[in-house]
Image (cartoon, rainbow, N blue to C red; front, side):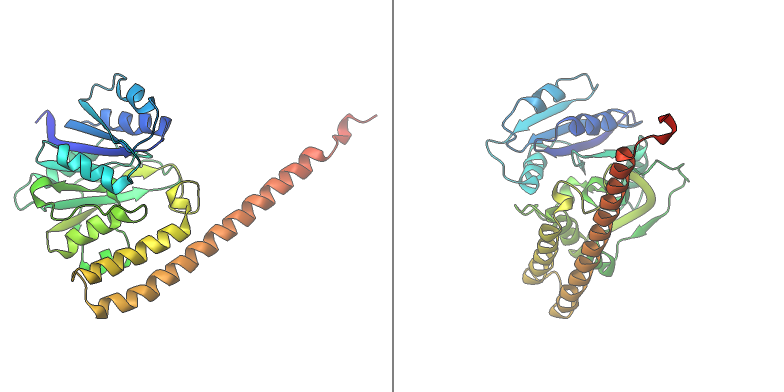
Length: 283
């Protein structure tokens, strides 16, 4: 096939040039999608219009929401507007490996294919590694999806007719809830052991939503509570998850604090060196 029967959904909110990078990564796919939907989540400027009008050799449908509703609502809008049998999601500040759609759609269209698939995601500017094909795909287990977000949304492809849940209209972990709810609902889900998506920042502790550790913590706890309240997990599963998420939060907080100390010491050393006169030029 020359194109994939797939809609790519990209929510954006004042993302600037990173949206252009995301679209370039879609345009660089060796197997291109038939449809790309960019949902402007109330940015209030014309930059998304300008970027989407650039020549990406893609069929881009730009939908502009009247106000900022959050990435979950933006993705739900994209799902409702989509026309292809498969959906892929890409955050505006992420990008894809050029072979991502070819590899993932081969899996999704094979006999006995899963209804949802994902893969690894790199952070902090991870370089693309050489691919080792055929790529191993393992089932996403109940335990795996509860203790960690093993399927970040920019790695997910799902059959449109398998969508059973909407993204919640929250501003943290709404993507984790969407994937976890589908896995826990029993649809066959797999994860490939290759890194086919990446972000140019660390997983947490930087600017943007990923830097808001408190929001992430509350979002993860809210996700687990909602999964329990809707009957997707039991009380025996929910209780230990509260302790687990708190432990992860403390670990992340410690890592960020150590990182900030290291940056402070590096800047201080650099400033001291700049302030030191070059005695080799003294006479």
